[in-house]
Image (cartoon, rainbow, N blue to C red):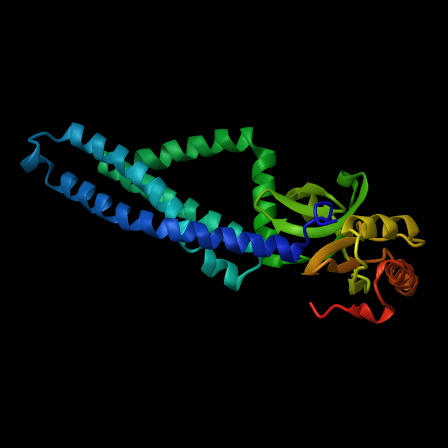
Length: 300
């Protein structure tokens, strides 16, 4: 049934694009509001003595406001660029590039705010070096995944939607699935109805085996009156004689009076079993369709 069918990589990517488009519209409105606030803050800092007659309190207040505005501006900018990134890249890479844009913008805003607050560049450099050492020691694993994720995005040994097998000691053997996202820290695989998050450092050290997706069954059928799509789903599952990748998908395509048209898709675990899987599915559909000629390949 529709509720039981796992989301495919293409559907997952399409959903991300739709969400990015909706967020981009809101982000553009936020940017229109944030730009005047940013300009007003900078002008208030530049003319602080003429407007307020004091220096240090205004410097500190301006620095705090600039950090807040910078954070909001970076978030809105990343979201506003989302649709453009999704048109040019796969879902995982687009999300990662958007994150990097936000990160760089926030870093620039923080450095500018520190300069406004009167902090010397030498102090920032020494403090940043000490912070980097402490942070690096405390987050070695996270930084390793971050660096590995950057390498994977650059090398692109696989893409979102590819079926791959990772073989490495850190995986206790191997793990297999369809790549659904490429993040900075984790690579996510879909295996049946489950999602597997593999640390990027493990992926970088693993052997990547691309797997060719076997040809599957994709057919539409007009059911007899009274036959429910869920009944067709159960019949197919109970009558299969070959292993399949995921559970069969029975989707509602059309309603015509008391009859419905469904689309049935299934993929064998092995390409050699494609013919036998087609035989199993057709045998079930011939039992539930109104007439044999109402069974036809899907054009979708």
